[in-house]
Image (cartoon, rainbow, N blue to C red; front, side, top):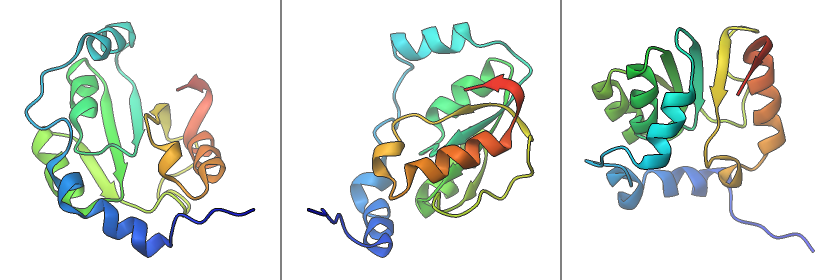
Length: 136
């Protein structure tokens, strides 16, 4: 039995809806887990944040000494993320990413896969964009 969650157009409409525009992290302070993750990261990396949302976590990572580029579907989030000092582009993750091969040191893909029609495709694109021997 095949379960359908809707069309890509319906998904886009969902991510432009009011609850997604507000963002769960608006005005929040970093949580304990987020601070730990940032402390464990090394610095000086070019990091791809796939599904960056409003750029909240990307901003924390960037403040720790890394350069973060976000990819996000929501037009609203693409407008607000630069206010956090994070570069972002609006992109549908079911399409090839607009980056050259091996152009990032690391990638973040946090709470995104479950929202995608083709998560395996997105993972292949992340892998293509990572430098050999680096990681997520």
